[in-house]
Image 1 (cartoon, rainbow, N blue to C red):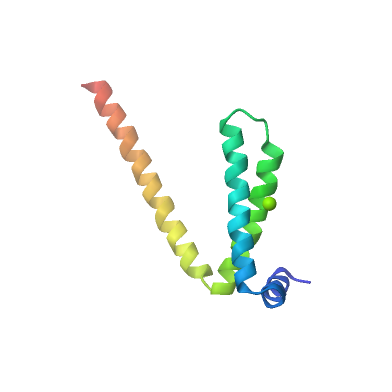
Image 2 (cartoon, rainbow, N blue to C red):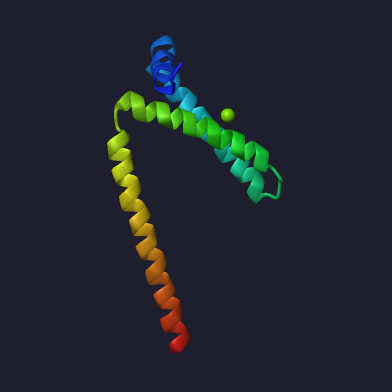
Length: 99
Ligand SMILES: [Mg+2]
């Protein structure tokens, strides 16, 4: 079964409320694993598993709310903003070192 049909079936079968709750739970599980990594646990495999879970749920959220194009636009803008911030930060460091 192709992914989009599988996601549609899942939202029909389990309902939007349940799928939203699962999305929140998967985000929480990833949060927990990242927190463990900060505290020194070697858990790359668990982080990878939780990232996969979150990505699967985010794909479903985007499809269900039909926001794929909006998300892509926000991502493009925010990545550009991050790039500008990093470039400006590098310029600031260079200026500080020259003064
Ligand atoms: Mg999980």
